[in-house]
Amino acid sequence: MNDQPSDLSLTQRDALPDEFRLILSDLPRSEWSDHPDFNGLAAFWLDRHLAFRRLLDALAQDARSRIDGGMATETYAARLSRLGSQLLGDLIGHHQIEDQVYFPELARLEPRIARGFAILDADHHALHGLIDRFATGGNAVLSAVGDAAQRKATGRFLTDLSDFDRLLARHLTDEEDLVLPVVLKHRVG
Ligand SMILES: [Fe+2]
Ligand SMILES: [Fe+2]
Image (cartoon, rainbow, N blue to C red; front, side, top):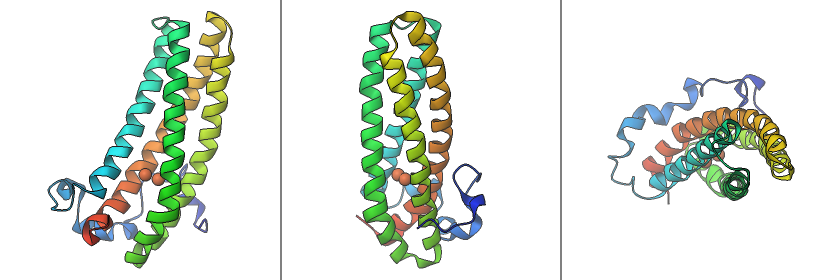
């Protein structure tokens, strides 16, 4: 499901093109929470995304505290290990269920925007490259010995985090705009 123009790839696009906003125009974001079927899969989906955004915010905040010297070496290592493992495990599982279960079902329900789900699937592959970079950078921090070495590794890791955060934010927003209206319209879940 990766046959799309390169300008719609995760690193290049600023938003989903209008052709994928057909259902969204009938069910705009401002109306989602008032929809009678919101408190099911729709709310759950948004909640998962919020958890990913919060985890990344916490990881970046911790990294800045470590670089500034406000957070102790051992405290930072323990938090990075815990929050990093949680983020990667949860995110990989989330992508799997989307690719294997939800995207095919939603594309079948709304064939007019089916290609949008292929774009989201391709995003996951791009994000897995960033996940690998995140894991490598995080492990470099955890294996750094001493205060100065850990701070230096954390500085590099913060750059990885910033790229990851920017592209994940793009993906989550576009996915919500594509998925939530279909979930609500067809009462999926
Ligand atoms: Fe996704
Ligand atoms: Fe998602």
